[in-house]
Length: 248
Ligand SMILES: O=C[C@H](O)COP(=O)(O)O
Image 1 (tube, rainbow, N blue to C red):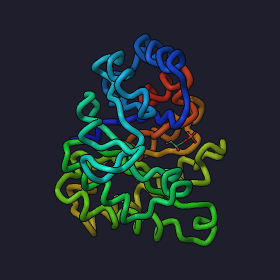
Image 2 (image 1 turned 135 degrees about the vertical axis):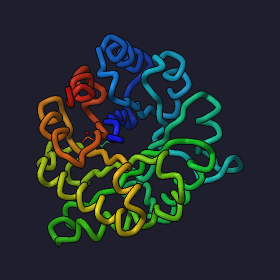
Image 3 (image 1 turned 45 degrees about the vertical axis):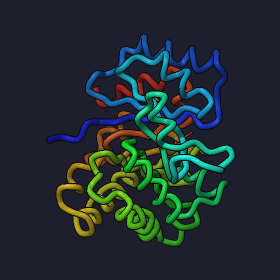
C-alpha cells in the first residue's frame, strides 16, 4: 500500500483568536486534496478552540506534551488532556524544543512513548544543525535521534510520522534541495530496514520540513521518499492550501 501524503502545519507560537479563525476559514474553503492527510499544530491555549471549529477532514496536533498523565508539572500539558479535548496528534522533538528548551534524545523518547501509550499519533522530529552537516555528520545525527525513538515506539510505528527537518533550513528561507532532502530520507529508510524492519521502512511516512513554500513544494513532493511536509511560517498563510495540494 502506498504511503498517504501527510502535510503538517506547525503554527509555533503564532496567532491570536482572529488569525487562527481566519486560517481555519481559509482551509475550509481550500479546496484541499482529499487524498492528503492534514494536521495543524496549534499553540496549546488555542487547541480546544481550533478543535471546535475545524472540519473533520483536518486533524489538530499539540506542539508538545509532557511524559506523564498528570501531576505537579506547572505549565505542561499531558497526552490525556490533548485527547480529552478531542485532538489526536502531538508534535514531539522539534528542533526548537531541542535547542531552546534543551530537550535531549532520551526525554524526547520518553515523551514519544507516553504519547503513543495514551493513543496519540506522533510527528517525531529529527534533523542536523549546519555545523553537523558541514562536519559530514548528518547521517550520524539523524540515525542517533531515530535510534533513541525505536524502543519508545515499539510496535506503534503505524501511529508515527517522522519529520526530517534540517535545523539550518528552518525559518531561514534556505530550503534543502530536493536532492539533499531525498538523500537523507532514503538513508533513513535504509537505516530503518536494517535496524527496525523492512515493513516499517516501507510504510513509515517521512515528512520534510524547513522553509517549505508553495514555490518549492511541488519539486520536493515529487521525490520518492518525501511523504509530506512539516510547514512552519507558510502554514500561517493562504499558500498552505497549495502546499497541501502539491502532489496534484
Ligand atoms: O515545524 C516546522 C519547521 O520548523 C519549519 O519551519 P519553516 O517552514 O518556518 O522553516
